[in-house]
Length: 233
Ligand code: SF4
Image 1 (cartoon, rainbow, N blue to C red):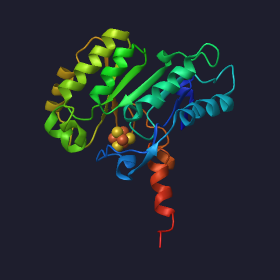
Image 2 (cartoon, protein in one colour):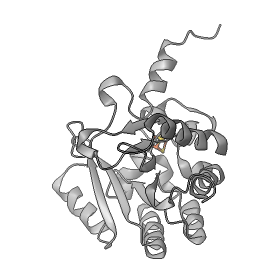
Image 3 (tube, rainbow, N blue to C red):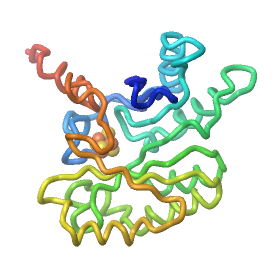
Image 4 (tube, helix red, strand yellow):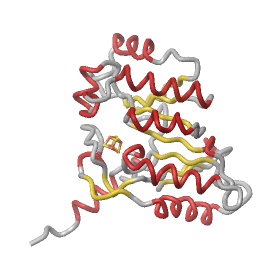
């Protein structure tokens, strides 16, 4: 769990929560994906991340305003616990925290995106796109062979139309892999829906990657811990 309460983003304080220990998706560029999958977090463990951050941050200036599921794991792969936690945060007799302040980042597990849309839960969706065509995306993100880009963007647009929430497309710029002019044109053609927005991520930050400098970005802490643990005998 990370906090983002830097002066640059003073108006909002965002926590980044995890949905799984490890991740089974195995994206080639991701530290979490390369270190395997242990288990799903249960609903209480996800709710607790919010409660701990909320207690640490307190009320008034700097209080928690937003939650993003961009920590460890693929949230759609633990759908019931994730949606259960969001509904629990939203209950007026508990925290009264609007789902509109929650963003679920997904690699694009289409059946669960469709299920979310059918429920009408007004969360924001962030699609981890990272490539503008299926050939390249399938190399970076193997599950793209099952759920190709056209199916993912269609599901994302359906969610935006149903909920009026914005779709963010996350795109990590990888030098000489996905950053050509032609690929930029392909990307622009893909994300032309009125509620679409692209986050470009590079190491010297257009969109800041929090914690990278101290190995605390997504998956790095766990990878470091695993490296320093003694080998089983
Ligand atoms: S990028 Fe997301 S879905 Fe892919 S391996 Fe990492 S945590 Fe899992």
